[in-house]
Image (cartoon, rainbow, N blue to C red; front, side, top):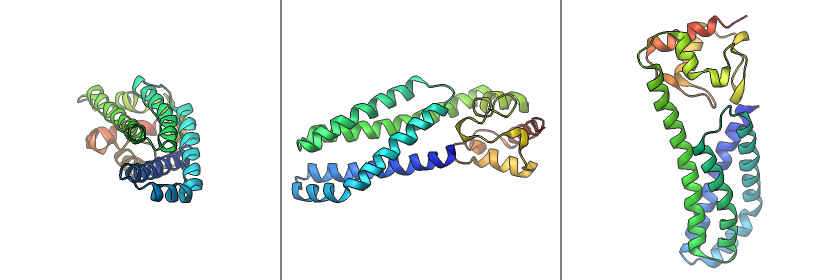
Length: 203
């Protein structure tokens, strides 16, 4: 369920950004007639993208174990940008329309910053340890839980996993859906240690 909504969110956000980028360009270029036609043409897809964007985003928020300050700032920025955009395009106000687009892009940038901060914290936390349990605790508990059964953020139940060791290693290395790809964060020995530790969680 989470993985499907994660991809819905990703697609709807990108579609939303493209629509607003095009509308902003038309407004800034004084193409009012073209903007009116485009707005009319894209009205239904825009409503669908906006609705999916909000619904999938709200659902994913309910699945996050801990909401950080940067995420809260991102949410506030997105919420403010919506009425600013509506007023800007309705009144053909270039500054408000541009401000709204910048806010939406900034919110997207904050999401990327959050990912990088998590990666950086992960690298500092694991240091040079090869212990699978320690690495698992530093990186995996928030979604998989101490027993592997938490299933937050669309995570699989590790206690009933049917994957063999090679498949586990590949999954940890490359990630899947909302799961981080640890290939650039952990070395081969650390990835193998985590995979071996997750095998101990199986019933």
